[in-house]
Each structure stands twice: as C-alpha cells, then as structure tokens.
Length: 346
Ligand code: NAD
View 1 (cartoon, protein in one colour):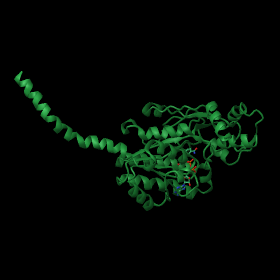
View 2 (cartoon, helix red, strand yellow; view 1 turned 135 degrees about the vertical axis):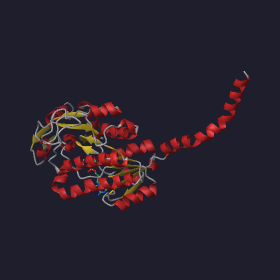
View 3 (cartoon, rainbow, N blue to C red; view 1 turned 60 degrees about the vertical axis):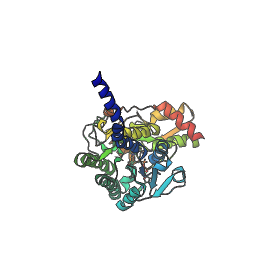
View 4 (cartoon, helix red, strand yellow; view 1 turned 30 degrees about the vertical axis):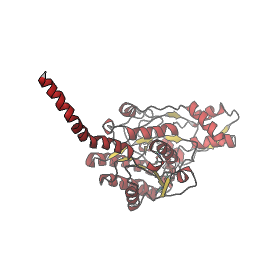
C-alpha cells in the first residue's frame, strides 16, 4: 500500500514535468495547422479562380496569397492578397515565399494543350521551368508542400483508350502532353531523391461556369452551355462521337484540397494520380442540354483539336486514387448540366 502511494505521489509530481515536456509538441501541431500559408501561382485561370476561393474559405483570406502574370478585376484580386508574378522568375517566387512565409505552393500556371501547339518552344519553357523553380524551392526547404497538376494529355494514341490504367503505355504526341509527362517524372524524382512533398493528379477536361477555359481541347464542353443559352445553337470543334474524360470543377477542386490534406504516408504515387469523373461525347452532352433547351441545335466542324482529342483516352481508371486517399466523384452529366445552366442563366 505504502509503495502504491509513493507511485501515486511520484506520478502526481511528474505531471507538470510531462506537461512541460509536451508543450513543444502541442505547440508545434497547432502551429502547423495555424501556419499553413499558401501561394497560388496562376490564380486568375479557370482552375485557379475557384481553387483560390475554396482555399481562402478553408485557411482564411490572410493565409492564401493569389498570384498571376495578369491582374484581372475580379474577386481573386479584389477580395484578398494578390501579387503579380512571373512563374518563370525564380527570384520573384522566392521573394514572395520569404515575404509571406509560404509553406504550400499550388502551381497552376501553364500553357494548355491547344495553345501550346501554337507555340511549342514557349509551352515547354513555361511548363517545365516554372515546375523546376518550385521543386528547387522545396528541395532548398523554403516550402513544405507542392501541388502541381498533370493531365490526361500524358497519354497518347498507343495508350489503351477505355478505362486507361494508372500504369500503362505513355507516348504523348502533343508538346503539352510531353511537358506534363516529363513533369511527372521530375516530381517523382524530387520526391525520391530529395524528399520533396509534391502531390499531383491528372485532371481530365474541367467544366465550370465562373471562368472561361484557358485554351484546352475540352473547352467545347464549357462553351456549349454558354452558346446554348445565348444563341440556342453551337458549332462544335470536335466530332459528335469524340468521347473524352471530363469532370465538374467542384469535384476537381475537392480532389485538389483532399490530396493536399491527406497524410503523406497515404500517397503511394508521387508522379501523378489518374482522376476520373464522367466521360461523354459532344452528342451525349447535346442530348442532356436538350432536356432543358429542346430547340438547341448543333453543327460539327472538327479543327486541329480533333487530332489532339483522338490521341487521348476516352475514359480513365482512377482506382489508385480511390484506394489511396479515398477519392470519389460526385457530379454526373445530369447534375452538372443542371448546375451549369442554372448558374449561367443568372
Ligand atoms: P488557365 O490557362 O485557365 O490558367 C492559367 C493561369 O496561369 C492564367 O491565369 C495565366 O494568366 C497564368 N499564367 C500564365 N503564364 C504565367 C506566368 N508566366 N506566370 C504566372 N502566371 C501565368 O489554365 P487552367 O485551366 O486553370 O489550368 C491550370 C493547370 O491545370 C495547368 O497546369 C493545366 O495544365 C492543368 N489542367 C487543366 C485542365 C483543364 O481542363 N482546365 C485539365 C488538365 C490539366
């Protein structure tokens, strides 16, 4: 009994010491949550606009710094911290990181598939060197985490088109696809060699109503809603049976936030995860829109983007993302069409 009391007394006396020893750990955990400071590069684009709004709502306006080479008159610029920056200028990025004590960088600046084909050398320069700048800043321990988006454009005509697996033949034929595939290899390399915490998904074509798309091959699937409401007719630059993987923007933003919040051990893939939502043809989306606008008419006039689309998958197997970090899409073609038309009508 005496011995028991002594142990009790001892543990009572040790309590303040244990608490004292735990203080740095408790403070550090809280500090990590409190001190996530985000820099988004390319924040005025189709994805950046919605991503910035979402991240500001999660982490607070003062902890999310939006930046872009263009300063638009929009909510991103007017409702929070915004800086003009050139993603090709290492010193500018480094300066912003130091100024705002940035921990996480989301690199959204890039030349997209259709625009890149018109200026391959510049597309290569922008898409690769902006990535190297951010990877090297993480290697130098100036930032903790990177999000960098890849694309279904990493696949090519020799890739199995239906249910394209995570690991498969990858022979992209566009400069955009080549830059994304190379970027994936470098992300994985920096993770394995230097422990850089870089996270990535291969976005399919993204559909949103807030911002115009930025020059991709799947842009028709956004424009079609605008023209259906405005003109009641649409000329499509892809043929009516061209099936491509697509996703509603809300799902894409959620995927981006989720992969950045998951514990690092959960992520087995450090190149880029396949990500899927819905796959459809122009003909299928037309029929869905016709349920709301019965007189809607469409003509088809495929241009240079048809060749790009023909080299891409029709549907994607994203089971690795579903298994590793619990990814699940929510929007189908009917729910997406309803939201698109409702919001564009306003
Ligand atoms: P976007 O073209 O709409 O936006 C890119 C933004 O980057 C623009 O606001 C542009 O002004 C900015 N930018 C361009 N050059 C810059 C520079 N030198 N410095 C700073 N900012 C610069 O593109 P998005 O659709 O928002 O795509 C973002 C990322 O997601 C890209 O890497 C793209 O490849 C990838 N992605 C997009 C889609 C899609 O359907 N939108 C699909 C797959 C992958």
